[in-house]
Figure 1 (tube, one colour):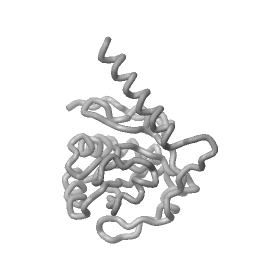
Figure 2 (cartoon, helix red, strand yellow):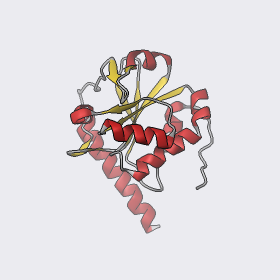
Figure 3 (cartoon, rainbow, N blue to C red):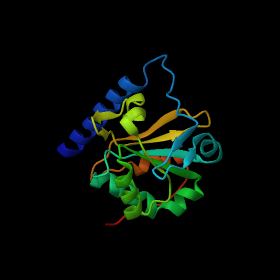
Length: 178
């Protein structure tokens, strides 16, 4: 019981802190560029993706983050159901690009991986937690390329599956066995 209270308190604290940093009254939502370049040098058309799909950006703390790696595996295992719900993804990480390509290969996650060079997007979204780390999160990108927080943070027993399902407003099985 005490652990539940502590966990809920921590989630509320992070949520309030994020709200304070990210969405002050009168602030506009951050707008993403029309295009990004993935780790293979290919153009990712955010405007097109956001118009055609329910686009989500999944941030990785760093390429070495095992919990972030597991987050991608959880998404991959449910990918068919997520796609039926209209979901598409972009993975954003500090890089470097060659390490991101390795993560992509190991997870077999079939969506674009983008290196956030200099943490330019992480800074814009107020998600930089160290010189080379991004706060793990999932954002929805609307047709105007504005971002909406779906889920902030993760740990070995919490990945934000319920928040993603709620945001998609689509039924898919959450239970995963490891």
